[in-house]
Image (cartoon, rainbow, N blue to C red; front, side):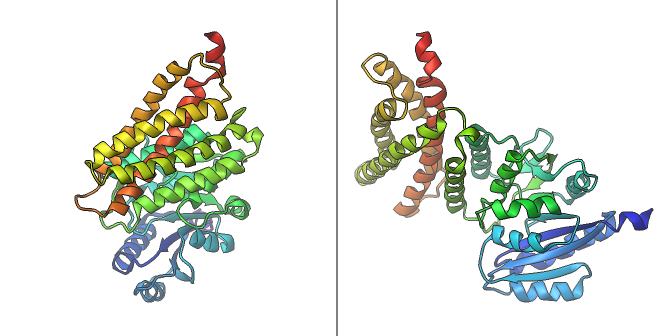
Amino acid sequence: METAIRTRLVEVVVPVHNEQRALGPSIRRLHGYLTRTFPYGFRITIADNASTDDTWSQATELARELPQVRAVHLESKGRGRALRAVWSASEADVVSYMDVDLSTDLDAFLPLVAPLLSGHSDLAIGTRLARTARVVRGPKREFISRSYNLLLRSLLGARFSDAQCGFKALRTEVAQGLLPAVEDEQWFFDTELLLLAERHGLRIHEVPVDWTDDPDSRVDILRTALDDLRGMARVAFSGSPQQLPRGMAKQLPRFAAVGVISTVAYLLLFSSLSNVLPVLVANAIALLTTAVANTAANRRFTFGVTGAAGAMRHQVEGLIAFLVGLVLTTGGLAMLPDGVPHKVELVAVVVANALATLVRFLLLRVWVFNPKRRVSR
């Protein structure tokens, strides 16, 4: 019976870029844990994507030292690119990945892959947002993670709870079937993979995890947030009208056009005012001014409401969306350390304002300019 169980093979990919300090201790810890406790066959693949430090030489040394460990080198950077390369060529029954910092408690790994090996599920993800999960991380990452997953559920109809947890597994045939349709090669890769899986009706199993934030994480939070927002916009606009709520396919491009103009106006106004006023005051004035213009423009061009009837009420209700934006952008600025360059402040408010813009669209669509609500009045 033991021999039969061990014929099943699970491949664990650890994508790395310039991780010379963490790589050795993490791979040895992972290898020791799987050797002692994992009841199936396993292979650990270190996927080095374009490291410029000593990561690759350490990876090859670990592959010589430890059985069931191998190393793969890619010339181009990108976590998604690394996973695609290894998973596409894998002969394992299940492919998986985890971050090199091993922030997720390894005791969750068997519950992650067991439903895939049994055929119960097609994909499995660790979730830090379940009630039974135990998570230790700072308020900035907590805020960004929850906001991002809220947007996925609200705008794209996602039903999974935590897209960004670096602890996922798929049945290999499922992964290899989905990969050709995934466009992203960076951090949005696994979010796009999950959205495609749901679109095809595949079963996603979620495992609450214990997770401790790595204080030495190399992830650029602001850049990753911008990339994720661009990825969400691409997936939303690439969906057919049948995959979006009724009317949204026409409303989204118009709302986006108004949003681009409003964002440019906001940035110009914020940049000018921040030279003469405190940065939080400049942010509030710039946001309020553009919020009024944005509501008026969306009223006419996005949602097709004409005439003076209800115009004042729409502006008053639109101020609630303004308050959401004020909280998000003020929070983004408040989390920045003192003395950061002005361009960093601009990036922070762009990320927060993009999040506020998506929330604003939802509020305008389902509440302020809801056709059923207008008829009932």
